[in-house]
Amino acid sequence: MTGKTQTSNVTNKNDPKSINSRVFIGNLNTAIVKKVDIEAIFSKYGKIVGCSVHKGYAFVQYMSERHARAAVAGENARVIAGQPLESILESLASTLRFVFDMKMGYAVKSQERRVSHEDSQ
Image 1 (tube, rainbow, N blue to C red):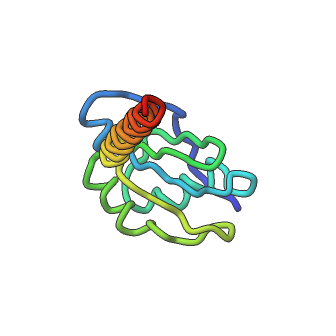
Image 2: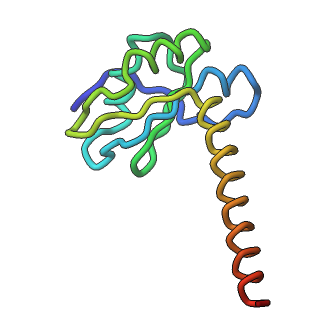
């Protein structure tokens, strides 16, 4: 796969505008799909100011939240290199991670209580 645009690797700014304008792309076959490919696919939704690719996932930073939302709507579940993408807004991804962590913490604490309760009987 080939692309044209080369952007910054910065996709980790924590200001609200940046977070709301960032797309998380999961289930990505990074052995085949490279940064330039992601940029070529996602640039049709708006100006990309940053793109970073990691093992199995990537982030695309747009200039605006509107562009990020359009990318999520247009590319979620698209099959690239034999795998369906999971595209979500970073602000939503952060919320989901928080909820997941809270549930997992609760599950671990509940399990510990049950084990200690069973031990005391």
